[in-house]
Length: 224
Image (tube, rainbow, N blue to C red; front, side, top):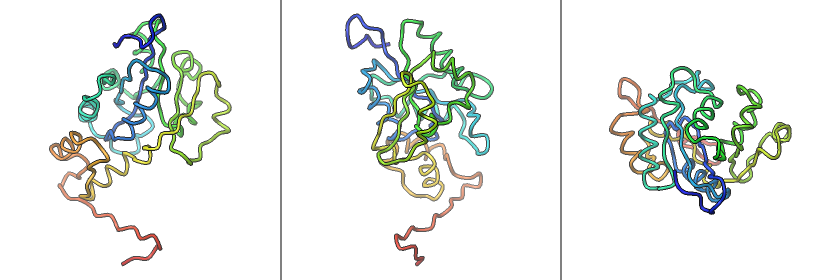
């Protein structure tokens, strides 16, 4: 772990959990912005093993998502990737992630869990909510102008939750997968090395190797 930026203070570590299927520049910008906002010493990216909230769709193998995350973060010395969720069997729950990372870092480190503001609004449905807030400060990332469930957020402990606006969050993993499936480019949406990994391992292409084709969007709603 990096030394604290300020002598004499507790180390601060950001924890960005996510499916990362695939990881994209929005994730990286969010990690960098939160690192700057809170004066974090480092950000650890934690790809989920078996995301319990996404059981209704196919998720790429954990090893592929882990390796894409390693590739995407390799150039930033303040980013690193943990296998803690990928290597744990069964569904991934945030409480297990934070318990394991707390055990790894020890008690003299402040953890900041970074997630989407929409996901944060659902935190009261997560396991062991009270313990979650004891283990970490939660940072909800949103894009400017995006409506979030403020009623739910107001019910959360103010001293343990912060909302941060991240312009690059207009990028989504869902759109990246759909673009690859439709044989459309994802250059500049995801890091170059991740684009190459997706192509090499034929991720997001169906078993037959076929691609779908998305209909073009027309601002006036007309079709060609």
